[in-house]
Figure 1 (cartoon, each protein chain N blue to C red):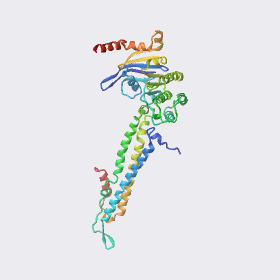
Figure 2 (spheres, rainbow over the protein chains, first blue to last red):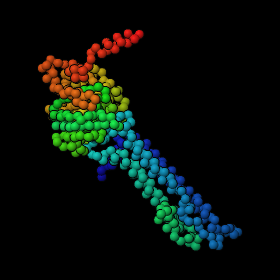
Figure 3 (cartoon, rainbow over the protein chains, first blue to last red):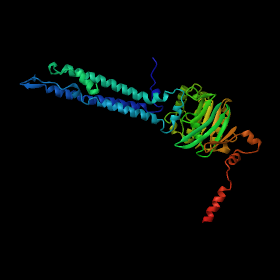
Figure 4 (cartoon, chains in turn purple, green):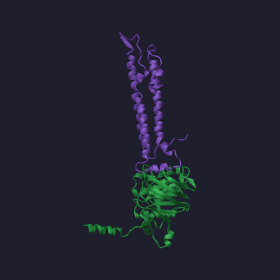
Length: 170
Length: 243
């Protein structure tokens, strides 16, 4: 199998190792920040129960908070990361003005997409990774929410509420 | 043939090029001269498509697009190399993007100028960086090599070497358009001189014609520019009188 040469997808001469480290740190921090959901969920779930002696008993008529409410801004880190990718793409472009005007060379390459590929590939890849991870975490947390909440405490239409939270016009 | 007709370029209302007409044949070495702000760099940037312009620039009758842009190369005093790559990395980059890249010429020139192949270009001296810039332009495999003040910062011996190498390595089909202020230095190496003044072609002469007339490039330029030789003397004496 042909080995992917990452140097073809970043501005020539840039320290991509450092960039990848920062991006990995950003993704890691976003995942870590999203764990806040589990703490909030655990607290909300705890409120559904009352202690009778040594036993925890479900409160009568207890209703679990809606998923989007508990999720709150848990996935905000990914949003910030995606905004950072716009800045990274702009930095990649202006990198061609640092120390020389290598932009002159990039703009006269026979392959018109070379400059854009090198400026955008890493930010787009990271954006895709952030969206994918955020989506997977959303599904995971929703699964936890559905499975770990007593069925009688769930209010219907949670999926719809998620959509409404992300797309208010929906 | 690189043909420029009625080329006009303005920067926020100020006309930098005022209807330039110029044809460059294959195999010529042309010196492009003019005072600062005459439009030399603007002319080259228009040819390369870096600037929007009015008029027409064609390469063998075709507009310059990505399809034929590889037939033009550019060496500039602003430098267009990647400072964080080595000469060897540049060779790989150029080879990957310009199929006509002249590897053998590149290695030969690198050796001749004793340039380190494995050192980051940003760590080289300004003179060496200029050499890399020019070597890359010469080795891209282009038919038209545009050079904009490429030797700013090089010593006179180095420049002399370069002119000689240029004459020695260029193949009959390769054209060089060299913009410089170093009139006397290049006059032995160019075949044609084009003078620009305030965005217009002021003169276009073959060096052979100048030689036959017993004229030098400097006197031709001074004559074309209507340079007043006694200008400095007059100004100085006026200044002394004021005292």
